[in-house]
Image (cartoon, rainbow, N blue to C red; front, side):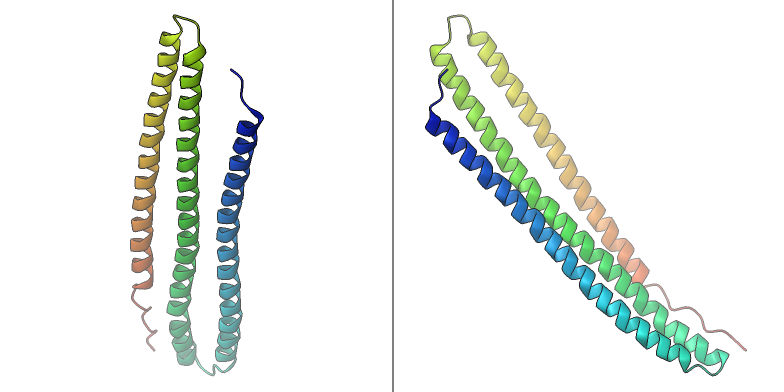
Length: 181
């Protein structure tokens, strides 16, 4: 089976474009994660300075209890928000990469079927059974891939809903009780 140089050039171009799309998605996700990190770091520094000022102004145990109560809940909320943002970026990036992979698999399968059809035209008599077996294996592999892909998506959806529920419970926790004298 002879493949024209133009066919290989087009295939190489398509592979380079696919690699560029993967890189853009990955870099976009990394860029968003860095942005989240920078915002969290700035907020943590500002909060740390505010907490240090509040702690420095404490004169008795009651003031300490009040400062502790006013600092703890916002810290939990910010931590939960940070984790949620990181999780959202990671899951969005994973979903985008998953779509690209699905497209690549579909394109590859089309190319294999076209190549098999071309090969079948010039193949010796009696090779139809082998070609059909290969096509059947390709269909079975695609079905298995689709099943795994659906299971992974369902797992991701369940994990996301569990994570969101846990974050809501953590941030909705009642404030600690004030110490009695």
